[in-house]
Image 1 (cartoon, rainbow, N blue to C red):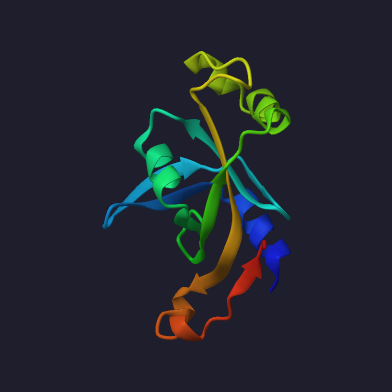
Image 2 (tube, one colour):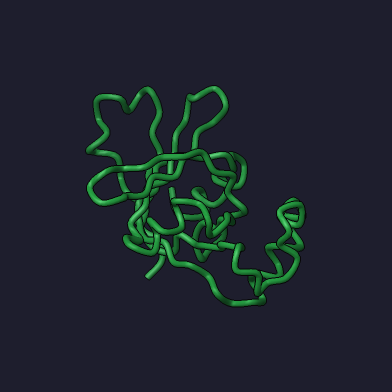
Length: 143
């Protein structure tokens, strides 16, 4: 398996769980990933959410993607960065039109949070791997 398999799996299973850290306390929430590509995993949220402040304080995250029947899981751990590039932010608004319902219509809106998990490792897990998790090969991505 390689990172292309990770991209495909994430794009087919866009609802995932994102873990951040607040102090020494993990925080997990469900997220709808925007998309995955060779550069990583892309997300959109709002700057008023707790996860945004958590990312600013500590960029380390973990993602958990799963099939609807829970028979296959992809875990990703790495670092996230907040995206300030207006071209990407404009693309986000165009491709995720529901953000307009929140009053976010321009890329310079301070409520718009776009972030990318740009580096890390991923691996796939199935029930057959239950007792062998430490032996599952990791797929590195990013710089």
